[in-house]
Each structure stands twice: as structure tokens, then as C-alpha cells.
Image (cartoon, rainbow, N blue to C red):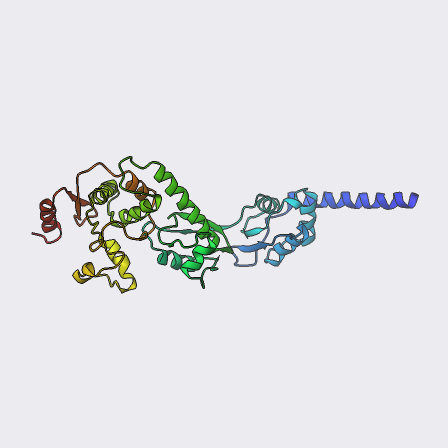
Length: 334
């Protein structure tokens, strides 16, 4: 019995000494040093890693810190089980206490990517491939396969992702980011559709998305956006062709060389709104929030035409005669 008591006493004293040493080290330790010339050390903490393993990972990253003391600090802090897996960056000046706080809070190092209003799905895919430390899980997938994996079987990908800046942890999947952007667009579209004008010619949220994408591509000056939405709504209401160049350009695809010719306007495709009435079959780009609202809440106007003034703004006309005069003035210079 005495022997057991003696062993327990020794263990208790050892634990107390270890505890005291760990907290003394914590309060007196200098910030963790990185290898000479290093501005940052990357930490990748895998799921299921023990606190001892986390300390070993910190040291393996190149940090100059006693692994045994770091292990003891993690355990004796009472927060070892709260350390979260993820991608972290250890920067100069980080103390052991700050390191543990960062790991417990899950303050991962995040990268970001911006999906720009008016981008096509082709441009989105190109940006994803260039994004820093984003795993390209969609690289070998067709657009149809991507939409299938996003739970949107049979839906064309164009315009289905909301343009915004998305933060992600290093090593995240581009498919996961697309899923977030698709959900964001679903929410934005539902919200816009719930605010639609009572006299809108649009029959569904999908039609609103298509029109919004056209408004997005046609708008040069934000203050004109709702007016442009009004022009297209008026045309849809009376059965007049939309006659919008961006849809024709989209239909040309990679054949478009930057110069829209008369023969292009006359060549019939599903996206040629000069040769076909109504909306094209799909969106032609990603519309932002303002374009969505302009599609469902257009400005009250009698205008049926508009032309660019050359400075980003548009000249609106109610009659073809007025429009032709505006074209002569701003396009032909007469």
C-alpha cells in the first residue's frame, strides 16, 4: 500500500512540476521562431490528429519550438480536444498561447476568389483553375457533369452562380465553392422573384434570370439598369423582338472575334434575338443583385429603344424615328 502511495505521490509531484514548467514556459517563452528568411509556415492539421500530433506538425513545419513543452501546454490547457482540423498559417510573432487560441477557434487561413458580374460560365471555370490552392475537382468534368454533381441535373450552368467574393480554406474543392455560389444565386433569384412587379411579362424565375443576364450585359451605367429592364419588358409585353447584341454574341461562342457583323445578326441561332421572338433559351452570363431587381422591377417607361452614348450611358427613345436620330448622333456621328 505504501509503495502504491509512494508511486502516486511521485507521479503527482512529476505532474505538478510538468504543469509548473509548462506554464512558466508559456509565460516566459519568446514568440515561436520560423526558419531564417521565412515569412510564414503552413500548418495542415488533419481530422483526428491528437494534440501531440498537432505539436509535432507545428515543429515539422519548421517552427523552432520545443515539441515536448508544446505537447504539455496543449494537454494541460484543457483545450486539447477543442483543436480544429484545417489549414493555418504560422507567422512571425506568434506565441504558444496565441497558437493554441488560433487552433481552438479554427481561425483558418482563407484565400478568396471573386466571380464578376457579367462573367460567363467559361470565365468562371477559367478563374477557378487559376485560384490559389483551390483543388480543381471539376477540371475533367463537362458542364453537364458539374451540374449533375451540384444536384441540378439537366440545368444549363450559364448564369446559375451568384457573382460575389468567396473565401475558402486552402485545399478546398472548387466544386464545393460552386455549390455555395449556386445556392447563393438560388436565394437571390427567389428573393427577387418575390418582389416582382404585378404587371411583369415574365412567367417564371428562370425567365427573370435570363432577362437579368441580358440587362447585366447591356448596362454600361448603373443608373440606366432599371430603364434598360423597362425597355426589354415593354418589348416582351407587345411581342417585339428583343434585338440585343449580347445574346447574338453569346450564340456565336468562340467564333466571335470581337467584331459583330451584319451577317451575324441575320444568322439564326437559338440566341439570336433579332431572328427569334422572346427570351433566349438560357441566361447568357451571371447577373448581379441589381440586374435581378431591374428584371423583375423595371422602371416605368414607354421607351422601346436605347443606344449607347459612348460614355457608358444610354439614350432612350419611345419611337423608331427618335431612335434612328439617336443612332445617327451617337453611333454614326451625323
